[in-house]
Each structure stands twice: as C-alpha cells, then as structure tokens.
Figure 1 (cartoon, each protein chain N blue to C red):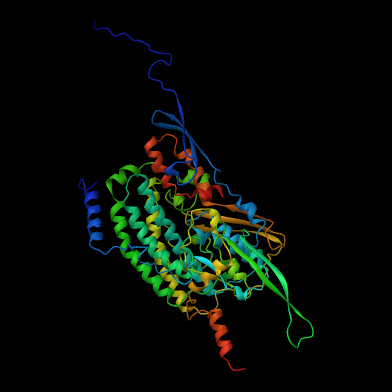
Figure 2 (figure 1 turned 135 degrees about the vertical axis):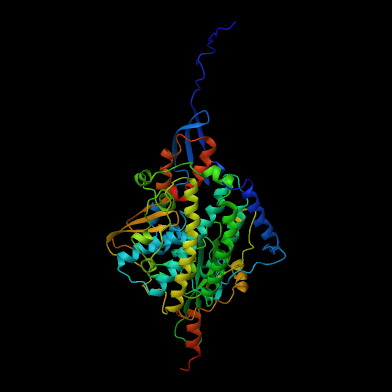
Length: 380
Length: 169
C-alpha cells in the first residue's frame, strides 16, 4: 500500500475555507467607543476592512448654527474630549480672524502654554491606554499619575478637568491665579522627572516590540492620500506639523521641533507620541517664561453680543491627534450660518481600510489602538 | 535584542522604585479632596441679588434653567406712586442637563450666581437632579473667595470693585 489516494470530503473541496464576516464593535472595548469595523476574514487573516462610522453622531455642526459664539465653545470642546482646549482654540481663532481682532500678547502666550499642556494630557492618555489594549496593564497607572499632576494645574486656572471652557473670542476667560506659572513649572518638572518610569516600562519592552514593530505599516504616500495627519502621519515620515509649517498663536517664535519617524508601524506611532510629550514639556516651559515677562490684559473688551461680520474663513490648528479645522461662514448674525468641522480622527481612521487587510486578527487590536483616535472626533 | 527578560527586569525596577515612595491615595470620604476655588462643582444662587432678568436662562446653551416670577407693588412712603418689583417664585437648575460651562454665571449682571467646588450631590434618580432655589441657596455657604490674579495681568473684578468702594468720593 505505497501509492497515495486522494479523497475529496464534503462539498467545499480540499482546504478551502469560506470567508467569514466579523463585526468588531460597535460595542467593543478595543475601539474606545462605538467605531464599528466590518471585517472579512480568511481564517486568521483579514481580507478586507470597512470602518463604519456614525454611531455617535451628535449633529454638532447643525447645533453650531443655532448657538452664539460663546455657546459654540461649549459644544466644540466636546467632540474630541481629550483635546478640549485645542478644539476651543480653533473656533475662537476663526471668529477672531473674521472680526479682525487682535488678541493681547499675554493671552496668546497663555493660550500656547495651555494648548501644549492639553497636548501632553492627550498623549499621556494614549501612552497609557495603548499598552493596556495589547496586554500591558502597568503603564496606564504611570500615565495617569502624570495626567493627574497636570490636570491639577489646568483645573486651578480654568476650573475644569476636561472641558476647560477657558477660551473666549478675544482672549481668555480670565487671568490665571497668582503663582500659577510657578506651580505649572513645578508640575512640568515633576512630569519630566517621572516620565522615564513610563519609558523604561514600555519603550523597549521586548513583548511590546514583538507586538508592534513592523505591524500595521502605513507608508507616507498612503498617509498623505488618506489625509492622515498628526502623530499618525509623522510616524510614516510625513514631516507636517502646523505648529512649524504654518505657525499660529506664538508657535512662530518657538520654532517647534517636529518629531518624525520613518518606519510607519505601530511602534513608530507610539514613539512619536512619547517624544512629542518631551517636546511639549519644553514648549510649556518656554511659554511660561514669556507669560512671566509680559504684562497686560488677557482679553479684549467686546460688546455683549458678538457678531462676526459677513464672510468666511478656515482656521486650522495642530490638535494633539492631527489637523483640526473649522470652516466658518458668517452672514453677519450672532450665530454662524454654517460651521464645518474637519476633524483629525475622522481622516485618520479612513486609513484603516488599507492598513488592516492582510494582517492577523491579534494584530488588528494593535493597529487599531495605534491610530490614536477619539470616536467623538470621528462622528462629531 | 538584549538579554532575555530584560523588559521584565526593567519593569520590576520601576515597580520597586515606586514601591518605596508614598502613595498618592487619599481616603476620600474621610479625607476631603482639596479643590481649587475655580473648580466647577455646582452652581450656587444668591437669591437676593436676582432681579429675574432671565439673562442666564436665555444664554444657557441647553436651556436647563427654569425661572418663574410675578410682579409686586411696593409702596414706598413719600413716593408719589407705588413701585413695581419682580419677585422670584421659582429658580431651578436641571443638573442632568447642565454642561457646566459657566455661561449663566458670566452672563449674570448682578452677581447672583456663583461656582462652588462642592460636588457631593449625586442622586439615584436622574429626576432628582433638578434643584430649586432653596437648594441652590444652601450652596452659597460653600462658595470660596476667588483666587488673586497673577500680578502681571489685570486684577480680578472683585478686587477692582473693592478698591473703587474704598476710594473716598
């Protein structure tokens, strides 16, 4: 009995397996919210991926049309709840540009300092949650310890821990309390001193490297094609940072170093985030130095009813997660006629449809987490 | 790659270092958290200052303030005619809707509304989060004095008002 005989069992014939359609989400812990991914699987391998968005659509743009500019700040700081300050900033910059307002210098520097503090808070959240998603539970405690330190100074100045509500058209809501710059400097110093704890735990950890290096490679061309921006695009070697390329606020005087990586994989994206925290800590220090030197008001006295003159403008800012733009069309009323948002996460998750096909299911979570998005920012 | 188990050793070193430090944990119900005076916990109402101008209710982005009032005639001795005065009947804030933006407080021209860092008003039923003027008034006792401003900036409006009052006319 040496000759082999081939037997066909069943109707499918051989080792062919049928493709399976798998929904990840809308209620899945790894998607931090309600993003749904419709996957077609061939065994463990993903054949295609379609991100389905809109489960958390709250109609923010429509609501903007029936709110005055101060009320818009309330809504605008909520779409990406991890970068509330940066979101407010875009709105007031757009209105100020339309009105031709000049913001006092002290307010400009304070805004820059607060925006960078907000960036650090946002990045620390992802630096903690991303390792958590792929199985390392410890870093999140260290990340949150640092977040708490910085949140304390932000709460002292603004009264809020998440939704700061501190920007106003023409400047800031009010002056910071006496001694705030000193306490902020101390907090920044503490975070800088303790950040190596987090880095030692995770940056070169071999399990973390095994899960992330070479996984989910996004090329610079793909990133550009999908309109990806922020840390996700910079990890692919796309050297684009509005703080450097089209400075707003006081960034023109700061000469922001742009953190980039060439690899474009999950680890590169994580490293960009980590290095950006260091850059932002330095920027906060330099802003505070200027704040201590400049005297004067932090806002412009405006009439009770603020009306933007007829016209349109587009204000974009480098939010922690990428480009955030507001296209403001005003017909001279106290509410905008239309205010369109361009959010960072929305563009960034579109790249998932090219990034995920071909990868294995366990890598999927690693890739998804490394795209650093907030679902509220996708669905608006 | 380095020595096998290097990541584990590094992780344990960080853990060991942290173990020797004091923990940050505060035993909350026994130890009160120290919150900054600007902390937006709840909105307190100073009823005497309210003139029922309705600005707060109109400016609120989600209209969670409910105000009812009636007019009363006040006879002032020596005056030719009786004066009319607004009397506040109802001032409710629905904290299940409130977005804690503080626009009402900013909009109030007579300083009748204040932020306080008080936060212990959780309820089991969402309907119980509608608080009336007596409850909002109780919170007035918890309103902290505003912090002094950075000397590089403009002084707070409370300070300016105090200086103006103290100045001889």
